[in-house]
Length: 333
Image: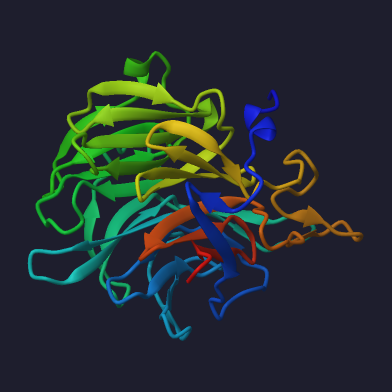
């Protein structure tokens, strides 16, 4: 794979637009260990954060006081998390369970597989809704779920089958499949459409797709009409996205955040000096030949994965043994 242009365009400080950012690590109470974190992240209205346990299956709720609670679920993994309201005023957490995780073994990690699922969990971890796999003959492995309006119980639900059939599905609020996109409208079929984001600021309402293996972001109208492709010459591993005060912020799994003003590329921040082709990446191989957690530095990403916004701060997860939760907030706060 050729060297991406971002190596020549990296920004020199942690900032988005005119906002300098301070890097803070968020303790989960379950840091370290041998679990390999592969999680999304979401914020609750009361300020608490939700992230998967590094060992999978369970959620961790991190209150703004720093206290944490472990919530048992029946899922394999919570690759993407989205908080939404229901018709009776309750909160649910939509989770894309890709059905795969790495488990500790020596010298390399082993793998477990289970059927992929897209479910809504209550805050006690119970499944209260589940979307059907649109084609049971080709099992899916969902990687992202997004709602057009998380405050509207009648909102359409979009699902990225990034690790399965490389498709995007749109469901009605009552679970009826409405649309399936394969990316061919853009001239290239999707290849691991890993993350999706619905941007509704301004006059345009659009679906953004982080088409990771094609190294691009593809934009569609909410009716499925192809609109445009961006960033094909600057991103190398787009994974998840948020809108931060009009800036599109994209996690790059190979170690950075890509920053856009609207759709205009500004640069990357926090870029890793690691070579993703080194043995064991995103982890490392120690002197005994075992796969172990990487050495980390504040201010530099290793393998950013999920991302969310709470108040004026960005929160993101990193894909690696032990995991890492990072807060990027305005430096003046």
